[in-house]
Image (cartoon, rainbow, N blue to C red; front, side):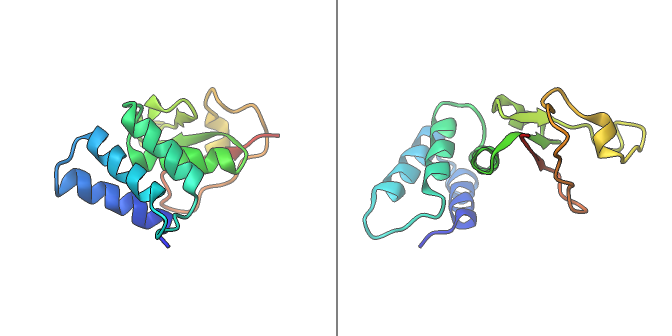
Length: 133
């Protein structure tokens, strides 16, 4: 079995260590998904992330985060990573430094918030998900 973290790490190594192009990495992920001897955790989300990578919509890791949020029923996922905004379900959240040191997450709700049901981030977590009402 290949866990989701192992898939993200594999993509990172193919990108950083082997310097493969996004379409080559997407092809490698697709081959892993097609093999009969490997069971991939969250296969549909990995497939969605592979498509996003192949189409240049964002990084594999960001697409996995977005796909897992969507699967959990979240209307969007907040991120501090501006590059991740190429994925439509991600929305930018200012860091406390950019917002004058303010840490009240709910008072700075971005455009994607259409609900009062918000999951609070754990200390040090740069991304959080917002559940639809």
